[in-house]
Amino acid sequence: MTSNTSSNSSGGDVDPAVREELSRLRDSIDNIDAAVVHMLAERFKATQQVGHLKAKHQLPPADPAREARQIARLRTLAENAKLDPAFAEKFLNFIIAEVIRHHESIAEDTLNGAETAAPRP
Amino acid sequence: MTSNTSSNSSGGDVDPAVREELSRLRDSIDNIDAAVVHMLAERFKATQQVGHLKAKHQLPPADPAREARQIARLRTLAENAKLDPAFAEKFLNFIIAEVIRHHESIAEDTLNGAETAAPRP
Image (cartoon, each protein chain N blue to C red):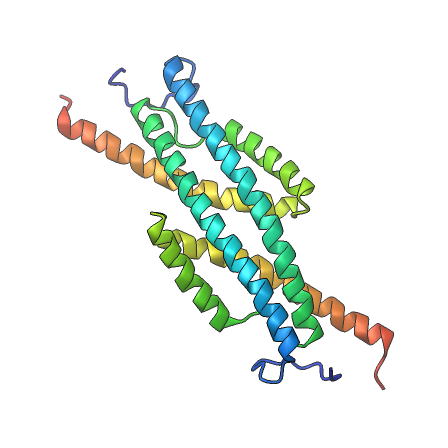
């Protein structure tokens, strides 16, 4: 190791053992990402069903009380798993924002479909 | 079902069967969220190790070529899982932004630690 503090941007002279360790860690990260993507696909299947149910029964797309409970629960789970609870909350808000967009669009489609099928006077 | 198009914000007059279905879906969403939070905790454990490795060997915190490969791979995985690939990309960017913040902070700490331990002339 040198005392050079500038960034080694090319990475050309990196110790092969370091490269191998980096590669091992990145393989784990890639496996985790694949798992998370599949979990999120399943999550959106569930929230799409919630969206249709809400649209059909005229329930509002957002539910602040439910969201507050979800955030409190995830923060606790994150703390126990040694994940920054603030990050867990930001993450849930990021997902919920996407879900609400979906629900609004489902509600709009349902309303338009209903109006086309049975126009009001 | 009524033809009322206004939002049922209180949810007080919702059919018990609808409530039950909503509750069933929400339980699944909560289970998925718990799984994802634990996966993310594990992911950050791996990226923290990457951060320390990069700081020790003066590798830059961000790696655009690696990120481009990750995004392309996750978009394909998302498509196969019927998740919006644009959302998967947005999600990965959200996580990477957090990781780079961590790596920068690790690099700073490492540099400060090195300077404190062995001040330069």
